[in-house]
Amino acid sequence: MLCNICHKNPATVHLTEIVDGQMSELHLCEECAREKSQAMEQQFGLSDLLAGMADFDKPKNETSAMVRAVKCPNCGLTYVDFKKIGKLGCGECYDAFRKYLGPLLKRIHGSTQHTGKSPLKVTKVLKKRMDIQELHNRLNKAIETEAFEEAAKIRDQIKELEKKEAGKKE
Image (cartoon, rainbow, N blue to C red; front, side, top):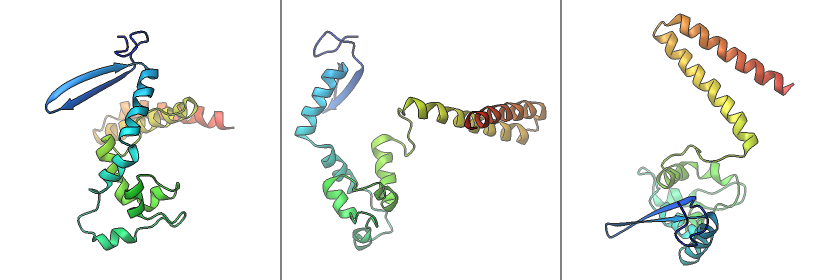
C-alpha cells in the first residue's frame, strides 16, 4: 500500500480518526508521518495532552492537598507542575509519581508494561529472559497437573538455556 500523501513510498504508519461517528483512515510513509506529526504537535502539543489526561489520575482516597504535596526528591518537580507542563523533570520523577503515572500510562497505552520496540542488543537478552520465564511458568503448570515427564523435559530446557546464558557472560 502506498502513502496517501506522496503516493511514492510504502505506507508504514496507519492512522484511524473518528470524528462525529465518521471513521477515516490515513496510510502514510515514515517521512510524511513525521511531517504530519510535527504539524499536529504545533497545533496540539503532546505535553498538553498528557497534562490534560493527568487531571483524571488522582486516586479516589486522596485529597487535593495530598496530591499537591507529592514532589520529586531529586529535581523538585511537583505533581501539580507535571500536570501543567506535561513533562517529567528527571528519571527519579517516575518513582516519585508512580502512583499517578500508572493509571495515566494505562489509559494512554492500554498497559503499564512496555511491549514496544527495544534496541536490538537489549531485545535479544530480554527475549531469552522471557523464554526462560515462560518455561518456568510451563514447568509450574506441569507440576501442578502432575505431568512429571513433561516437567522434567521443561526443567532440562531451562537448565540448557541458563547454562548457555551463563557461558556467554563469562
